[in-house]
Length: 170
Image 1 (tube, one colour):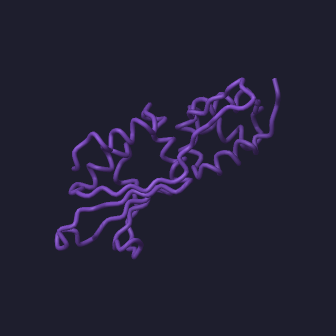
Image 2 (spheres, one colour):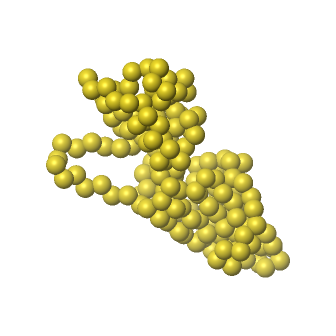
Image 3 (cartoon, rainbow, N blue to C red):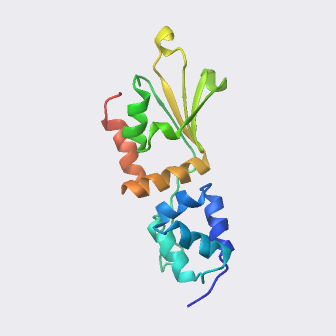
């Protein structure tokens, strides 16, 4: 049993851009256990760290050169999304209420919804424009945040992207 500093867990969580409650949920830990590990009140082992990472979808290989594929940036435009709330809940597997709303001028859009680093661009005046196009953008951290959602739902990136192709616009 190898003991490691709980600060390593805190750094890992911070690198994912997650709050303690969010991290505990996807890692399969109680919030109190996570806090105890991070502050050093509870012994944190390398084995426990691997278990947490496995719960989050990381895999470990005995191969000296394992190949790991990651999506580091994703931007997809959907041409006809009339029901954004239903789109978010059906395609992205999160509550629309988790997004904040703000004005923007990026990519010719005038409206932006944000949930961490998961961004959705659209138009305030879509009815007047008769333009129901949206763009989903995930930065590197947004991709890591999306992976946690996918892990919670038990699906892969492939499932997500195939779902985008297979469903009718809402």
